[in-house]
Image (spheres, rainbow, N blue to C red):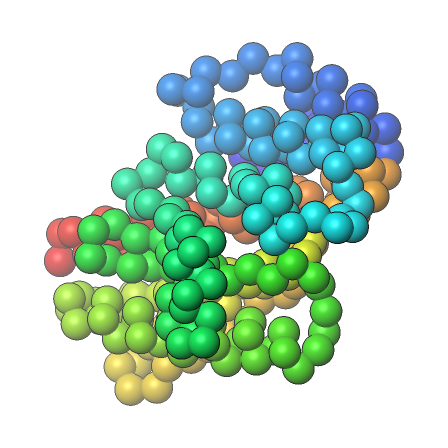
Length: 225
């Protein structure tokens, strides 16, 4: 992955980046990781070329489908399922606040959740929705997961909070079997301007893939323990 990303032209010309990616020939069966990277970056670049961005009056559904769709497709070749609830289910559960917008799971094993908000902000509402509510959901999932695993210290649940073009990862784990540790990672951003495309986009796709690989590793651990 690193070699692939390092070879992408460091330029402010979004059309040159798109053309470079478009000319790459990658076997999706032999090198799915690189195929996903190519497709994800190319589709992201296309949002600027077609003037879909910046975000103005786009709906929440449009944003998660067009801007953040590459997070979903990272799991296309995985045993893990990246599942989204329908709009009707999401609207019906708003008051209860118990069902996430998205869930990453395999059978009865749940490894991650996602919550979406249309607008990026630093208000108390975002903090409550992104940290407190999401934290409660991933704690419940961690408790359920550790019941089935003798290797409790290796288990971790990931929460993803999407707010406009910003993304946060929350990680909950239990190293010592008594106290849960909640870690909020550095905020990541989908590029808002075509000239800054490479700088924010590369760490974004890297972290999405790394978390996906770690969840697959924890699934393997659950299957054999």
